[in-house]
Length: 151
Image 1 (tube, rainbow, N blue to C red):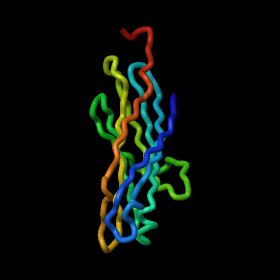
Image 2 (image 1 turned 90 degrees about the horizontal axis):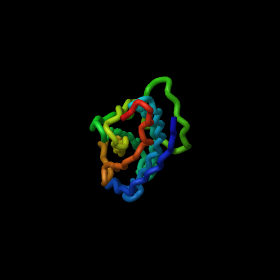
Image 3 (image 1 turned 180 degrees about the horizontal axis):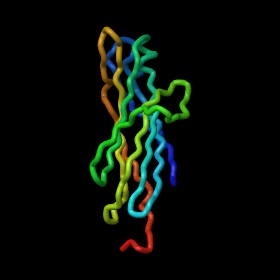
């Protein structure tokens, strides 16, 4: 079982008074992959951070994140589930987690693609998304285990 942490940031702009370039955001990911014969279990959890709500003076930020298995082109959305726990910092927002399985496909490396972003919710005045509205990053997972019965 291998666990790695990834930190990605995105410069962004939000056309709301007082925010502007303070709309930049960052995502902190923890990726665990557990090798089994001819497949692996992948667990991804994430938190997000931005100064957009503080710069605007009110409102809230709603983060979202999805994971795409590039071998089979399946998309999984991170959600918050009861009973799951995260270690977060003072200004971090919990995005959620997801667990899925990737089966071995020839000699290809397992790769996942993360897409994340947020929506600024200003309450009765409406909501807005920053520009760019999301970021995409690729993560190459560890190779599938080689077993004596693999050909």
